Image (cartoon, rainbow, N blue to C red; front, side, top):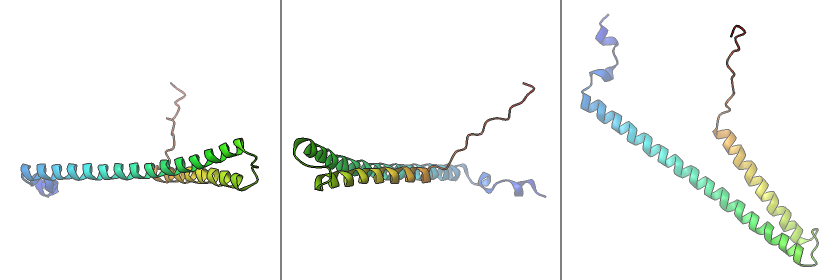
Amino acid sequence: MNSMASAPANLWRPVSVREKDTEFSLQRDTQIARQQSLDVAERFGFLVHEVRSALGTATLAIHALKLGNITAGGATGTVLKRSLSAMGELISRALAEVRHAVPEQRQTSPAKNPAC
């Protein structure tokens, strides 16, 4: 068997072509990483905006309850409950997305050697 036949084809390409391939790969990987970073930032921005909106509504409802003769069982209480529920749902979805995106990492402890 010819030893040259078993060598990777990439080794027989001119150095300048290999360098260009490597440079292209690095540029592509950098572009993909940037896009992923922008996507994450956009999703995080959406989450923060939605939580802030629900928090603002809940805060206004609490102030209204404190200031007036308004009962928590009325429309203001309903607005407060809906806002708190919306925040809870947003947080739950965000946590589910994070759990789905990050594979579960199991901590494995090294085997204990009784001789040590």
